[in-house]
Length: 257
Image (cartoon, rainbow, N blue to C red; front, side, top):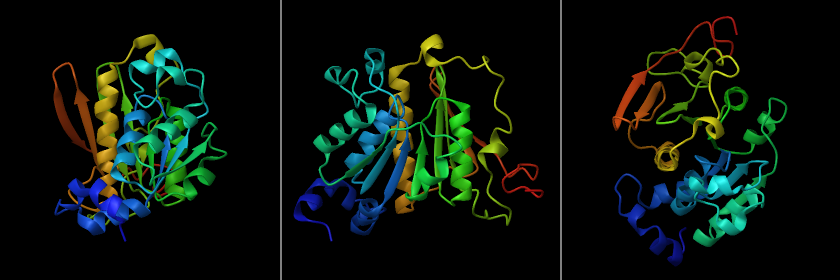
């Protein structure tokens, strides 16, 4: 049952027909793991906390730098040199004391990914490199966890949801991350944001949309992004959706897996 404080706090959710009291209770029971408390993770974590997610796990081994504050709005100037997990946890507590935060001060790798995702209901990847994206997506497949993943370029971004451990309406397995991106680009072809730059407001838009997708997945309303890649072009302020499907050659749930 929701307390009187929670009924008032989440009143604008509860009056939504698609959410209501039962949906809000689902959010309160959910355990969400966020990979990265940076540009995407910052707005994502704030909106998950505001929505009343019961437990938010945060995986990050980095400390706050002054150059982060242009886009990582969960951190403050006085948080510079603090662990991002600690800074983010403090921000969540200030915003919503009903939310539990679990900090994982580590870098997600192939070796620890399955152990990290196993304890959560849904995983959200806001990392900035392909090695982490492949590691977390493979781990979510093996642990049968839904994954929401996004990536940001200089003026563009992508967002999708993965449920490859389930079967789609066509009777085939849902696509994996490796169906969408079979191979990582050669080293050096995708510059880091420190070299190429990134619009702070763009990470805010995408991180907020990741939070919206988490809420939709937990509560269960609307058409999710399984098998659909949302592409954002801020130069033209254009949003497009590309459909993609299961690749029988992929190494996870392909015919020869």
